Amino acid sequence: EAEVAQSPRYKITEKSQAVAFWCDPISGHATLYWYRQILGQGPELLVQFQDESVVDDSQLPKDRFSAERLKGVDSTLKIQPAELGDSAMYLCASSLTRNTEAFFGQGTRLTVV
Amino acid sequence: GNSVTQMEGPVTLSEEAFLTINCTYTATGYPSLFWYVQYPGEGLQLLLKATKADDKGSNKGFEATYRKETTSFHLEKGSVQVSDSAVYFCALSEAGGFKTIFGAGTRLFVKA
Image (cartoon, rainbow over all chains, first blue to last red):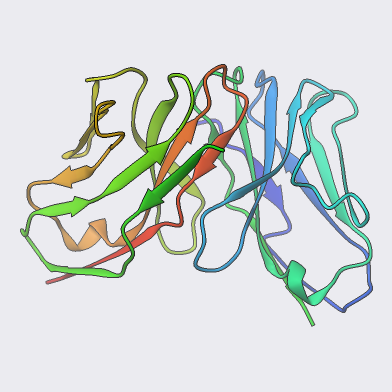
């Protein structure tokens, strides 16, 4: 069964360092999402791609976060510099189109120390 | 703006008990509604969905009905199992599919 792949599963980084997460969506899925899930809360959308274009990044802290999906396939989310408050689970999801079911990866748990 | 409110947890039940997790929403237009489940250490999985008023989504013994008049999408299961222990998220997808908004989640513990 096709899955959304994310790496790494866990990441510990020091404050002010740079960190990057990678996501490979299900083949053929045009829409890709990055969510942040703080412990005890629901996921919050950071950025949504349609193919290689960003269609919503209204909640992305653009002073430190960046995301790209250069060829409209896999995607990278970067944080530079990391802050203590960035500790969370970062979830990637993909869907065939933006109107269809989103499938989630297992997430990357980031701890900033 | 659009939002989802679900009952706070944790909810603790004995095996074979009846489960209800309340969810209400605020949205313009006609959103699609979802329940996702997150088992320990895993990502979110879609449990069920409903795309229009009065639709009933169902899966694995869980069901929820899209009630536009009460803006609700309560999750129910007649007889829970220990394996149902997880965090359940209610969510809505804005009309046109521009964004999915999640509730805060409700943790369910089922005791044997």
